[in-house]
Amino acid sequence: MKSDDGRELGYGYFYDSKGQAHLSGEDSSSAPDFAVRVAGLSDLEADAAPVELETGEIAFTAGELVSGLSRSAQVGALVFTATIEHVEVEEWSVGPMFDMGSLTVRLDVDPVE
Image (tube, rainbow, N blue to C red; front, top):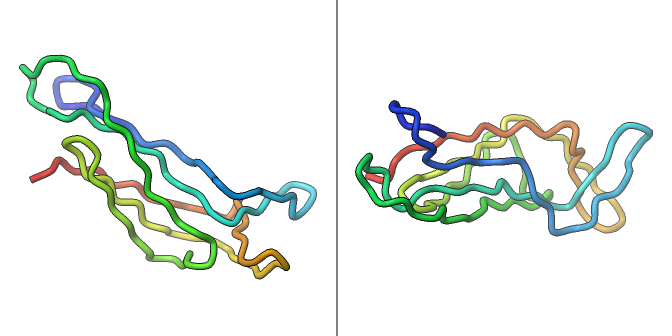
């Protein structure tokens, strides 16, 4: 994310998983969880001294994934909201797993008010 004057303010990237992913087909994989990794500056003011990015994550497990589920995290001076737009979840012998190719997540970012 950049400010109107082009300064880097933070970023989000997809995705991190703590659980074991499994091949679920010739061209697909499934996983028990994932997290959207995020980072943001602690001060968004143009004249702020350079600071390191603060980092965080927004985590989900396959068993709770449904379209419309949202979670937020404040990281630095930014609030990140991840919303599940689409996902396919199946019950495996090891528990719920989501098809990694089916996952669509929207990430919205706002300054802390």
